Length: 250
Image 1 (cartoon, rainbow, N blue to C red):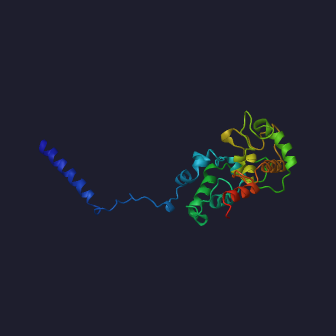
Image 2 (cartoon, helix red, strand yellow):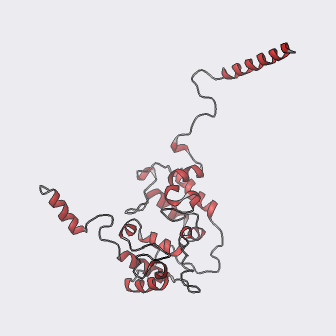
Image 3 (tube, helix red, strand yellow):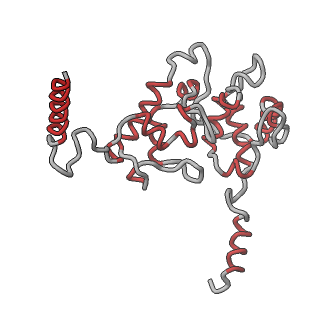
């Protein structure tokens, strides 16, 4: 019996040695190679590496808006999302990801991200029977009307001057406005922030959705509260004076 066990163990060892010799010394086994960064085309991997830090795991929202918001995906065009991912939004916290714009992603990878968002998170017909506002503004906003609209629809959460309240954060804060574009503000007003329990354009006042023009006006009012040199500690004129004082030889 022991002779049989010995022979079986010897045969198993030979199989292991033969399999180990099937690849040349120093050569990786088949399937063990890692894909180069520009060859990764898996949506989950690309999203996790490039988008999740700001937009949250599975698009649920974080420092920036939730991309898995079906209302957002219903009003925005896929090409617009593609352009934002590729080129970024100048003057905001959204960087450019396309190689042609200084980023690290190929056109194919950007296509994977944008098409993956819609195929996974879009809900067809979610806005049927409604009259949704347009993604981009069609008219010029009026600041005075925007202040009135803000107090009607937004002040209950964000305070009458937008400095924050019991239910909402400050939206006239200089740091916030320095990091978001007018289009970004419009997207938030229209689609809400479900991750923060902020309603979309239909839910601020029960039974009274915001009109397209009221949204445009609110954005105009918020934009008017943005500093002349957002993100800088000085206004444009003061900044020039400050630099001349630091570098009088220039």
